[in-house]
Length: 156
Image (cartoon, rainbow, N blue to C red; front, side):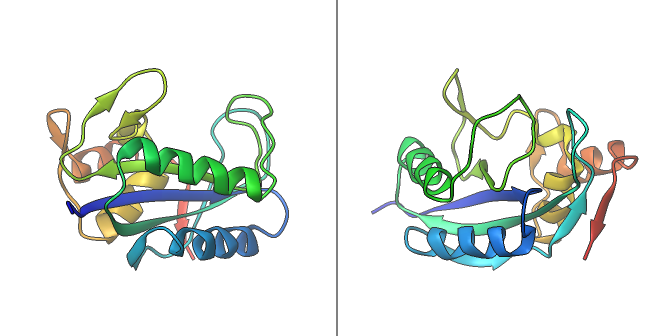
């Protein structure tokens, strides 16, 4: 079996944010080998006015395909009662595939690396914390982290 590194991003800004993230991590442990967790970060929402998010990244190992991973995380979001509202709206849980080793996909269903990776400090800072500084397009994680210095992202 081909085991790959997978980075998942988790966020919550409705209800008990910490509890929502802890619960999602517990569900994810049933499918992925979680190797490292970033600290929690409180981050300013992007999109409509809404409460601040708590975010973290998980570094995992998986033998699942990218589309199997996507199905797993969407099933977990559904199980946790995530409701689809407005784009970038408030949510009790959001789980995104940020990165998967040696995987590049870009279509309507899935984009890996995450299409907003280089524009979201709440992805970049925990990614750098976990020790990743790979190239996104032509520049490094650290380059984009510095470019997005103005976004509120406070390590808790």
